[in-house]
Length: 173
Length: 230
Image (cartoon, rainbow over all chains, first blue to last red; front, top):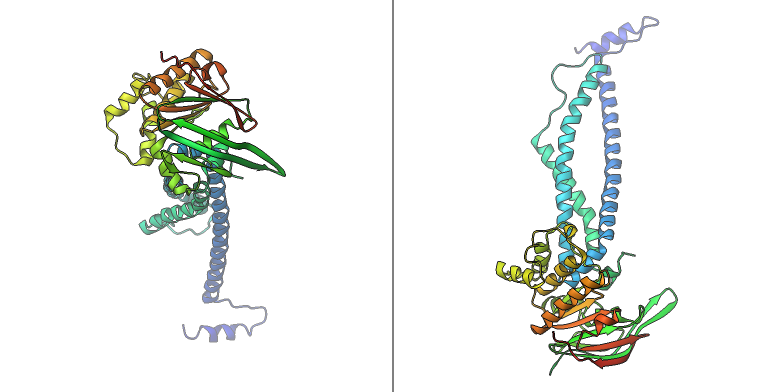
């Protein structure tokens, strides 16, 4: 082992011979895997930013559509805080179910993708590539809830600050 | 008699773009406890603006309002919430019921915000009172317009308000149904509730004890009517 570089240097003296050691191959593969991983992370980050705006937009729309309803609730005795709580509670329900559905789809989807990757990979190891850890599942659900709640704060604040009159006339300008 | 609701020098000005809209111009208004008052006037005369200010849903630009002896025109929103909750029942033209809740649940809704526990009997009593004794489990979509408005009236009554304010309560109803809603109002008034009803239906407005006419933001006429008291 210790003589690998010595031997390869010796061999490369022969014209038209290039020596690539297994260690170099491994290094290149590791580098490739690392760049693939960072590319993947970038894609995930972009997807998350886009979906955060999607959530925000959906919540704002749903709140906007129901402005009159909130106005009525204020007229029958709800405070701004009550309205904010209603919106946050709804957001919580939506994001928890979204997180759970997401995890279920990820589990189902990943085994489909695994099958596909194994089909095109020439040397695929036996057994499963995928390991779903309970921590990861917990983290995913918590993260989606946290992201959703963060997106819910603004619509909730906006509606809770509406005066009843603005609300009944309808519409957040 | 004591005034349950009093307003003096009410002026309300809105801005719509560059235009200033004078919805109310120095209106003085008074409602005695136990009275049944109607306010009529063409659209744009300021009826709704007046009702909303009286009901603490809006604040006047100038002027003062007293509800049950408390001046409400300079209170902050947080205090107005409590005043509205404890004193005022609102009924709107569009009913504004929650479509996924049954009639009974819609009536119970204000209790969620007042954090009051109301006994089952009281809720059933209100359902009976508004004539929906057997319709409590129906969703709004399964009810007629008149029935939906009855649910809205029930919802306005659950917190035992001192005064019921209604903005065009029969605006979406045919005349027969409207008459029956007014019969309900008269019944409630006979039981001691103070009512202020805004309407453009003159026939129904004359069923009240007092009728005020609003035009261009000013009260141009007040009539004591021979109360039918049927």
